[in-house]
Length: 177
Image (cartoon, rainbow, N blue to C red; front, side, top):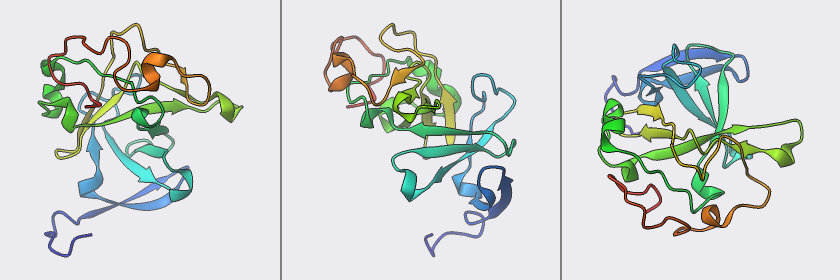
């Protein structure tokens, strides 16, 4: 809330989400997914909602469907050895040249037993925070799948930076460096 911001930067949108009720969103906080998310290609505008009581988890709320919100988290908090190998051309749609400058989030699945929380490491969300553009990648990497347990034993290659395949060639840089 910088007092020096122009009126265009502080424009506010009213939105009612089924999970959160009426909320105000600054236009500058809206994240656009030009290609949508997998299974939700028709929805392009989202906002990250933070609740200090639920940290480090965030909610990725669709602004086009009040009933759609995903729980997301930085994968590096739980899996410091997580690496994203991506070709530069895969990031052009979000105007990003270097993945190390992106915010990386993963979608969390919350089953009936919260001890079985899982993260989709195969389909990370890459956010160009500066441009407010984002994309969901589909990694072709056998180490990762769509349901990695957050609160159970973590494989060694995900447990610490510099795990297995640390010297694997990458056209951009690894996200955790």
